Figure 1: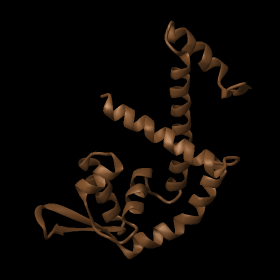
Figure 2 (figure 1 turned 90 degrees about the horizontal axis):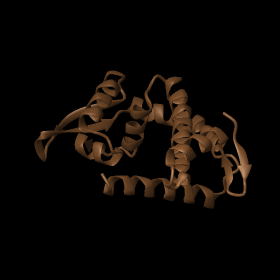
Figure 3 (figure 1 turned 30 degrees about the vertical axis):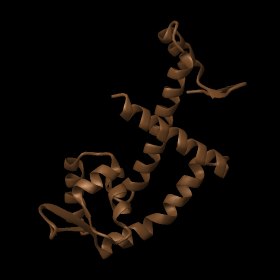
Figure 4 (figure 1 turned 180 degrees about the vertical axis):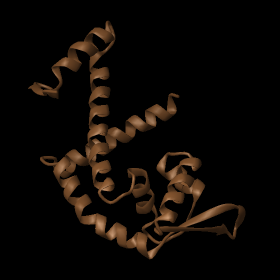
Length: 168
Protein backbone atom coordinates (compact mmCIF):
# COMPACT_ATOMS: atom_id res chain seq x y z
CA UNK A 1 0.00 0.00 0.00
CA UNK A 2 1.49 3.30 -1.08
CA UNK A 3 0.23 6.65 0.16
CA UNK A 4 0.76 9.90 -1.70
CA UNK A 5 0.03 13.57 -0.95
CA UNK A 6 -2.31 15.98 -2.64
CA UNK A 7 -3.65 19.36 -1.49
CA UNK A 8 -5.91 17.59 1.04
CA UNK A 9 -3.17 15.40 2.55
CA UNK A 10 -2.33 11.72 2.34
CA UNK A 11 -4.42 9.30 0.34
CA UNK A 12 -4.27 5.80 -1.14
CA UNK A 13 -4.52 6.05 -4.97
CA UNK A 14 -5.88 2.50 -5.35
CA UNK A 15 -8.57 3.07 -2.71
CA UNK A 16 -9.44 6.46 -4.24
CA UNK A 17 -9.94 4.91 -7.68
CA UNK A 18 -12.00 1.96 -6.42
CA UNK A 19 -14.12 4.03 -4.06
CA UNK A 20 -14.66 6.70 -6.69
CA UNK A 21 -16.12 4.04 -9.01
CA UNK A 22 -18.25 2.65 -6.19
CA UNK A 23 -19.56 6.04 -5.05
CA UNK A 24 -20.83 6.92 -8.51
CA UNK A 25 -22.75 10.20 -8.09
CA UNK A 26 -22.24 10.11 -4.30
CA UNK A 27 -19.41 11.75 -2.38
CA UNK A 28 -16.41 9.47 -2.88
CA UNK A 29 -14.56 11.47 -0.23
CA UNK A 30 -16.84 10.07 2.46
CA UNK A 31 -16.06 6.50 1.41
CA UNK A 32 -12.37 7.34 1.22
CA UNK A 33 -12.46 8.85 4.72
CA UNK A 34 -14.24 5.76 6.05
CA UNK A 35 -11.58 3.54 4.45
CA UNK A 36 -8.86 5.67 6.08
CA UNK A 37 -10.54 5.37 9.50
CA UNK A 38 -10.73 1.59 9.03
CA UNK A 39 -7.05 1.43 8.03
CA UNK A 40 -6.07 3.56 11.04
CA UNK A 41 -8.19 1.43 13.39
CA UNK A 42 -6.51 -1.71 12.04
CA UNK A 43 -3.06 -0.13 12.49
CA UNK A 44 -3.74 0.86 16.10
CA UNK A 45 -5.40 -2.51 16.73
CA UNK A 46 -2.34 -4.35 15.40
CA UNK A 47 -0.10 -2.22 17.62
CA UNK A 48 -2.21 -2.91 20.71
CA UNK A 49 -2.52 -6.59 19.88
CA UNK A 50 1.23 -6.93 19.44
CA UNK A 51 1.88 -5.19 22.75
CA UNK A 52 -0.71 -7.15 24.67
CA UNK A 53 0.22 -10.46 22.99
CA UNK A 54 3.77 -10.08 24.28
CA UNK A 55 2.13 -9.86 27.68
CA UNK A 56 -0.28 -12.77 27.01
CA UNK A 57 -3.49 -10.71 27.11
CA UNK A 58 -5.94 -9.64 24.42
CA UNK A 59 -6.58 -5.96 23.74
CA UNK A 60 -10.02 -6.42 25.33
CA UNK A 61 -8.51 -7.86 28.51
CA UNK A 62 -6.03 -4.98 28.65
CA UNK A 63 -8.90 -2.51 28.28
CA UNK A 64 -10.78 -4.18 31.13
CA UNK A 65 -7.73 -4.06 33.41
CA UNK A 66 -7.19 -0.38 32.64
CA UNK A 67 -10.84 0.38 33.45
CA UNK A 68 -10.40 -1.36 36.82
CA UNK A 69 -6.98 0.11 37.58
CA UNK A 70 -8.38 2.87 39.81
CA UNK A 71 -9.04 0.12 42.33
CA UNK A 72 -12.82 0.54 42.49
CA UNK A 73 -14.86 -2.63 41.85
CA UNK A 74 -17.24 -2.37 38.91
CA UNK A 75 -20.23 -4.34 37.77
CA UNK A 76 -20.12 -6.40 34.60
CA UNK A 77 -22.94 -4.35 33.07
CA UNK A 78 -21.23 -1.07 33.93
CA UNK A 79 -17.95 -2.29 32.42
CA UNK A 80 -19.75 -3.44 29.28
CA UNK A 81 -21.52 -0.09 28.84
CA UNK A 82 -18.35 1.92 29.37
CA UNK A 83 -16.39 -0.23 26.91
CA UNK A 84 -19.20 -0.41 24.36
CA UNK A 85 -19.28 -4.21 24.37
CA UNK A 86 -21.72 -6.86 25.55
CA UNK A 87 -21.94 -8.14 29.12
CA UNK A 88 -21.16 -11.58 27.71
CA UNK A 89 -17.90 -10.18 26.29
CA UNK A 90 -16.93 -8.69 29.67
CA UNK A 91 -17.79 -11.97 31.42
CA UNK A 92 -15.45 -13.85 29.08
CA UNK A 93 -12.67 -11.31 29.64
CA UNK A 94 -13.20 -11.48 33.40
CA UNK A 95 -12.99 -15.30 33.21
CA UNK A 96 -9.62 -15.03 31.45
CA UNK A 97 -8.29 -12.40 33.84
CA UNK A 98 -9.54 -14.28 36.89
CA UNK A 99 -7.74 -17.46 35.77
CA UNK A 100 -4.59 -15.34 35.38
CA UNK A 101 -5.03 -14.00 38.93
CA UNK A 102 -5.48 -10.40 37.76
CA UNK A 103 -9.11 -9.85 38.82
CA UNK A 104 -11.54 -11.30 41.29
CA UNK A 105 -15.31 -11.44 41.17
CA UNK A 106 -17.72 -11.16 44.06
CA UNK A 107 -21.48 -10.83 44.44
CA UNK A 108 -22.70 -7.22 44.47
CA UNK A 109 -24.12 -6.60 47.97
CA UNK A 110 -26.54 -4.03 46.50
CA UNK A 111 -27.91 -6.37 43.79
CA UNK A 112 -27.89 -10.12 44.30
CA UNK A 113 -28.13 -10.71 40.52
CA UNK A 114 -25.00 -8.65 39.79
CA UNK A 115 -21.30 -9.42 40.08
CA UNK A 116 -18.54 -6.94 40.92
CA UNK A 117 -15.13 -7.26 39.29
CA UNK A 118 -12.02 -6.00 41.11
CA UNK A 119 -8.39 -5.76 40.08
CA UNK A 120 -5.91 -7.75 42.16
CA UNK A 121 -2.38 -6.79 43.15
CA UNK A 122 -1.10 -8.97 40.28
CA UNK A 123 -3.36 -7.03 37.91
CA UNK A 124 -2.02 -3.72 39.24
CA UNK A 125 1.56 -4.92 38.72
CA UNK A 126 0.69 -5.96 35.16
CA UNK A 127 -0.74 -2.48 34.43
CA UNK A 128 2.39 -0.86 35.90
CA UNK A 129 4.67 -3.07 33.80
CA UNK A 130 2.59 -2.36 30.65
CA UNK A 131 2.56 1.44 31.11
CA UNK A 132 6.01 2.31 29.71
CA UNK A 133 5.84 0.08 26.61
CA UNK A 134 2.33 1.42 25.91
CA UNK A 135 3.56 5.01 26.25
CA UNK A 136 6.38 4.31 23.80
CA UNK A 137 4.01 2.65 21.32
CA UNK A 138 1.54 5.54 21.45
CA UNK A 139 4.38 8.05 20.99
CA UNK A 140 5.48 6.11 17.91
CA UNK A 141 2.05 5.79 16.32
CA UNK A 142 1.25 9.46 16.91
CA UNK A 143 4.71 10.68 15.84
CA UNK A 144 4.45 14.12 14.25
CA UNK A 145 1.04 14.85 15.79
CA UNK A 146 0.81 17.83 18.13
CA UNK A 147 -1.65 18.00 21.03
CA UNK A 148 -4.19 19.82 18.87
CA UNK A 149 -3.97 17.10 16.18
CA UNK A 150 -4.53 14.39 18.78
CA UNK A 151 -7.49 16.21 20.35
CA UNK A 152 -9.05 16.84 16.92
CA UNK A 153 -8.57 13.20 15.88
CA UNK A 154 -10.17 11.98 19.12
CA UNK A 155 -13.10 14.35 18.62
CA UNK A 156 -13.62 13.31 14.99
CA UNK A 157 -13.47 9.60 15.79
CA UNK A 158 -15.93 9.90 18.66
CA UNK A 159 -18.26 11.96 16.47
CA UNK A 160 -18.23 9.04 14.03
CA UNK A 161 -19.20 6.72 16.88
CA UNK A 162 -22.02 9.03 18.00
CA UNK A 163 -23.32 9.38 14.43
CA UNK A 164 -23.25 5.61 13.93
CA UNK A 165 -25.16 5.01 17.17
CA UNK A 166 -27.78 7.63 16.35
CA UNK A 167 -28.35 6.32 12.83
CA UNK A 168 -28.65 2.57 13.40
